[in-house]
Length: 181
Image (cartoon, rainbow, N blue to C red; front, side):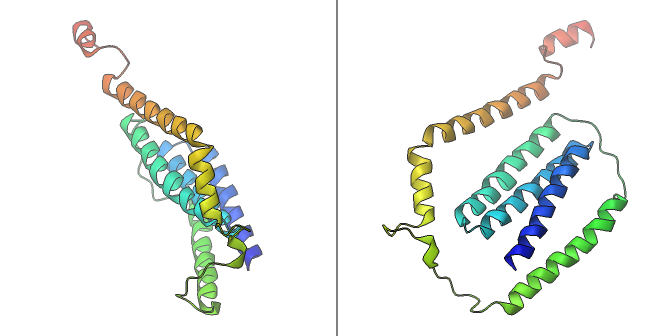
């Protein structure tokens, strides 16, 4: 079952990445990137890295993609044209949804002990620490500086996008009014 889920979500990840590169609209590209990030989270979950899977969904697919979409909309990348959807999305999307629902239904029907939360034996090391404890201690001790630098860079990028969108072409608003632009 793990192998089927791996190939399924690896395929979603590759399809989302290819779709990201082929799209001409930035919002559609952002949605494709969300598909990639969510598929990666499922792959992390299959590897037994629960913390990384949840962090992938919360940080990347959630927060950063919302900020990215907000910045794209703030920069006013142009009007989106209304379409009825692409034919390839219908041809691939509906069967993919049916396949995902069938896999989920199969997993739920064959699962033993639903609602029981236990810690598996493979999740602890010799000292009794779980993988999540180890990962968090490394992240907030040894990797604290890169973690904080990344968050500051993201904040600077957002502030720069807001400043660009606010002033239009980059020149002060007073100069635009005097020159008639």
